[in-house]
Image 1 (cartoon, rainbow over the protein chains, first blue to last red):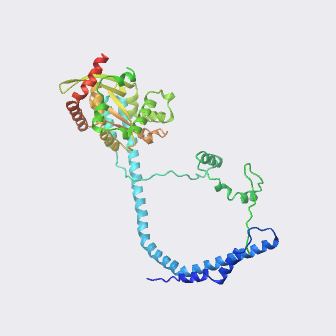
Image 2 (cartoon, rainbow over the protein chains, first blue to last red):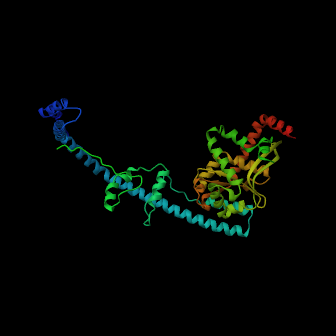
Length: 213
Length: 207
């Protein structure tokens, strides 16, 4: 697949089709204020025409751009097939490098521990500048080169025990990192499920949306 | 001698020689101020009155046999003045030792650092001409430069967790000491004439 044909003129035809133009004509003569049942019905009908016109344009746009979407999908599949083994290797390499770094860290920790023990033993026998100097030199000689470029980020997860969520929320609030929307989104449904009628500071309210049929 | 007396005491300090080689230190003024503040909180405050950061470092130092030996029976923030004979000249010299342990016969200097291991720390000390300080302080104290130790304190050591391995100890090698001696001699032979008058005039005034 080397060339694709996009019939963009066809969309211009639809935009100027009778159905869309009629919708615009109705909108142009529509009222700005609903004060009677008749106006309510008229505005509802105009909104339906506008919705239908939107759907007509969208459907044709989708049909016209389908070759483009298919081509993009095809290209992305080629890209995906090419990238996958490379990504797989990068992930494997990172894991191997991290594994080596962890081993080096363990070796260094063991060497440090042994160093502390040796130092304690040596200094318990004699605390002199010569002994101290020698131990300091040893502490340099046991340094094992640690791999660089390891980014360490601290993350949080549940450890399986009881979580004090109130404290979690309090900490987030104190750090100004708390977004109330996280908790409010599913709250009305949750309150209904557990039979909770009221929570201090929370107001349940009705938000109405007009449906056009 | 109070800190103020020391600051205004007319004698040549290691920092003046270091500054000659390292140039303008304005760029690291913030780090130097933080370091000075940490020194004060670690060395001039009794352990029971230390803040969390200083207490953490203090405890980590004492948790290490080397650190414990350096700190035990030591004096802190000890000003010392001396007359040094260098290249046929008598130089009034001064040094403020962070830690002076006369019982063991060593002096030590606490350095806050961003280095994570001793090898990087060593390079950092050389890069900032601290080997000059090590040799100068040793000369003022009348001890061998290999009895001057650094206590390197990095971020890990200041995060509140007591860990003896988070503190780094280092002393300069013979080669590094020789480099420092050469730099000091070079400074004395090329710069002392210029600074002598200012320093000596203040010295005479003080006497």
